[in-house]
Length: 70
Image (cartoon, rainbow, N blue to C red; front, side, top):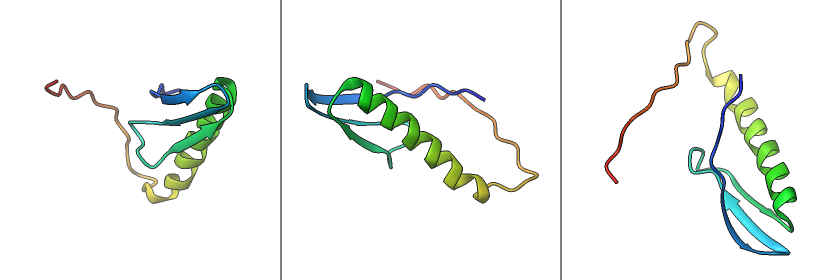
């Protein structure tokens, strides 16, 4: 399964930080955009591995879209 996530990046060359709005527990730092992106991918992978046991084997996961006011 492939999912896309937003990565909100702040900072400047040599000192970046970022977070994933869809997964508020994930905060990342890095010295370059490439480093930051690689760390974000790894953090998201680890996040999903850690919550997998909490899902019942008989459960179904469905993605939904919710329209929110701006």
